[in-house]
Length: 201
Figure (cartoon, rainbow, N blue to C red):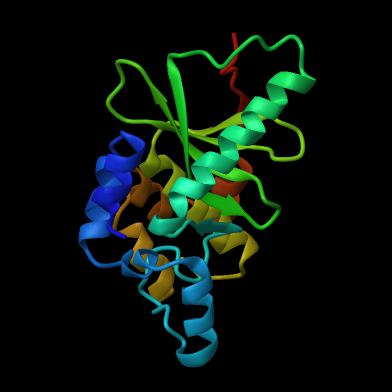
């Protein structure tokens, strides 16, 4: 399934940077279901080193395009369940729409948060155990930057590895400059903490 088919099905537009990376070929492995890709990794090391988040980034796994609709349905089942168990929530604010695009190993979902009148979505994390929604990044580029920093620090990778450099290419000039001039541990220690985001009425 192609990204454009997903967008048509969900009635949204993914961020411009997401499209640029997809057009580069680095997301080609997302054209297939995760189960298919996992089988190929076992058989033939299908995912290439230069694939975007191909080795996972931090604990973030991108959702295959054909699995996005079911991930969306599952997310809204959880949100509707949250409405039942949290009586202070009356409904989801119609200004907001959540589209999952990646998940953590824990099962929490990274989602694009679309807001009426805004061109580019923010990135939030939906806690599947808690129902909490936390603002993680103001846009997809910032999300990639945070994930790169986490991967270098927690994944014991070097900022100069081919895998990391392939992702740094997509960052804006300011983030590239920070990565080239500031020790990675210092960047890590000063990353903002996720903040609770209220999507409820």
